Image 1 (cartoon, rainbow, N blue to C red):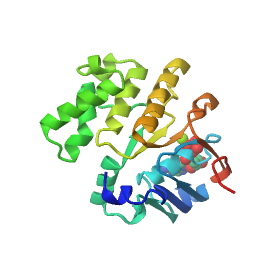
Image 2 (tube, protein in one colour):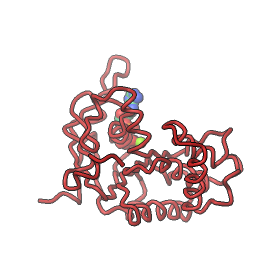
Image 3 (cartoon, helix red, strand yellow):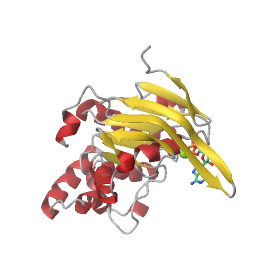
Image 4 (cartoon, helix red, strand yellow):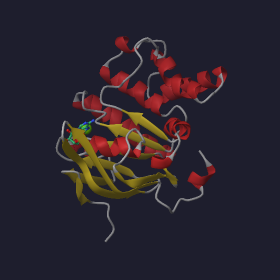
Amino acid sequence: MAEHMQASENVPLIQVDNVHKSFLMGKEAVQALRGVSLDVMHGEVVCLMGPSGSGKTTLLNIIGGLEEPSRGHVLVGGENVVSLSEDRLSELRLTKMGFVFQNYNLLANFTARENVEVPMALVGVSRRERHRRSERLLESVGLADRAKHYPSELSGGQQQRVAIARALANDPPILIGDEITGELDSNTGFEVMEIVARLNQEQGTTVVYVTHDPRMAKFAGRVIQLRDGLISEDNGLRA
Ligand code: ADP
Ligand code: MG
């Protein structure tokens, strides 16, 4: 973890400041976000909820630097994500934020272990160290015995656990999840969320995740509701 991220425990790890996002659909602008401000502190577990189309995915993508806001800023560990060069931004994504998606997004021609090792290879981790870490990561998500399996040979829950291990490849301080239990039955969903909760407790990983399911929201210390591109409720706001 970079020094600046540890040095500023009392400064929010993620700062979203008056973020707007509009998309052009033909000639019409769709206002996906209409002025969202949000601070996330180190070690928080934050759940974003809200109706379909309320801007949840857009907000996660902007925090992760996958999309640019039309207006406003996002700081992650004090760095302005919006103004970073492509290189620095991809480094930030590889080392500071692990992303997990609804559909797992694993590489079909890679084994579980190879999938977990991809982000490590991209930042130049040696082969030997990649093996050591991928073994440990797969073990931590309960898949030590599936390392050589391909995604098609794994259940949905197992694939999602591989995706979590991959998101953690470079030991990022932040985990971001978009409807990660959306394709799973509720027991499997709980198992996946328990892994996420354990990560937060044992390693202090900061988590921001989206869910539709109130049962999955219970894993969060703070629940934020989005509605029409604005925060309508935030139970973690201090008065
Ligand atoms: P949620 O994740 O809460 O369902 P999204 O963030 O995906 O909502 O979308 C918010 C709004 O922005 C919706 O009206 C959606 O149609 C629109 N939107 C999202 N992405 C795009 C895009 N790439 N192009 C055009 N409109 C988009
Ligand atoms: Mg979405």
